[in-house]
Length: 74
Ligand SMILES: [Zn+2]
Image (cartoon, rainbow, N blue to C red):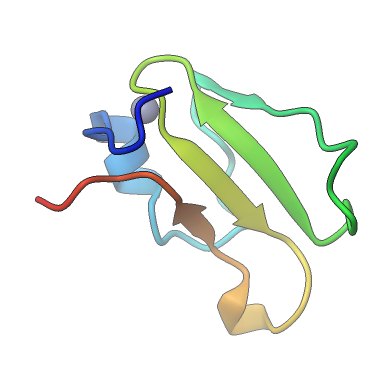
């Protein structure tokens, strides 16, 4: 995976959305066995552009969002 990617349109749209928004078609859920608290977040990778997302699904409501980990600056 490249360190800094150019997100595809669905990824750019998803970035910053609330965690209640469903993942788009090319996002696949990564194996979360190594995650210490698997209940708190889900990791996704986009098959199209290689974007790595974290979906925060626990904690404060306002912090439950889709975070894009490896997007380049626009
Ligand atoms: Zn993408």
